[in-house]
Each structure stands twice: as C-alpha cells, then as structure tokens.
Image (cartoon, rainbow, N blue to C red; front, side, top):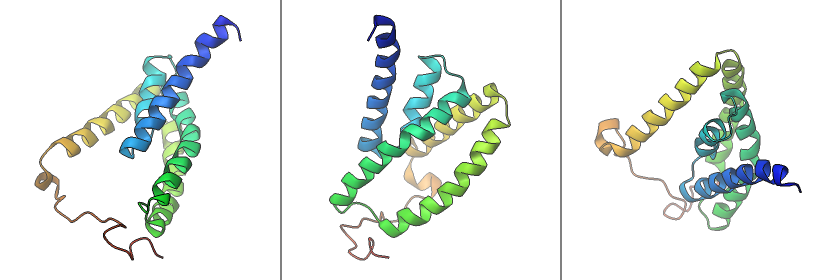
Length: 145
C-alpha cells in the first residue's frame, strides 16, 4: 500500500473504530460521530457522509446487538417493532434528505444533535422522563414476544 493510499485508508478506519466503540459503549448510532468526522475531517459533503454512515452502521449495529443479546440486555420484540418503523422511516428520511440542499441538511443534523444533547443534560422532569426504565434483567417477560 502506497503512502498516499495509507493516508486515505487510516482516517476512515479510525473514524469507523471510534464510531463503533461509541456505538457499543453508549448505544448511539455511530453516525453521530461518523457523519461530522467525514464532513469536517475528510471533506465529504453531508449527503455522501450520511449515505456512507447508513451503510457502515449495519455490521456495527449487528455485532453490538448480538453482544448485548448474549448478556440478556436486548428486548427482541421491541427491537423488531422499532426496526419495522425504522425501515420505513429510513426510506422516507433518505428521500427527503436527498431533496434538500447540503447546507440545510448540515444545519438540520446539527440542530438534531443540539436537541438530543439538551434532552440528556437538562433535568429529567423537564421533558417528562420520570417513567421507570425497562430492563430485561429486571423484567423476565420483557424479552419474550
């Protein structure tokens, strides 16, 4: 591999490694890290970064989910229902994303990240998050269909 090729490959692998680690650690979609890294560090346009991220997430999500499933930390029925909605939403969202300007798409992405960060950082009662957390370990029936 030439030094030029290595210079192209290494940043992409490091972004993937970082995104996969954070996805497994925090349960976030790796796109939260991958998209900004590809846009800001590698000069991808927003549309290309998002499309690339969507494909890259598949193997990372499958392996992370399998790891959680082995430890009894996955609600299969809930995951299947969310996935069904996610597939439809991904088609609709992708069609919409491809119909808007790159700069607007970047602003929407950044706004989404800010809203999520505020929701996590602000007091729980502010957004009505006082419900008990559901855990398969605490509820043996939670993982069954």
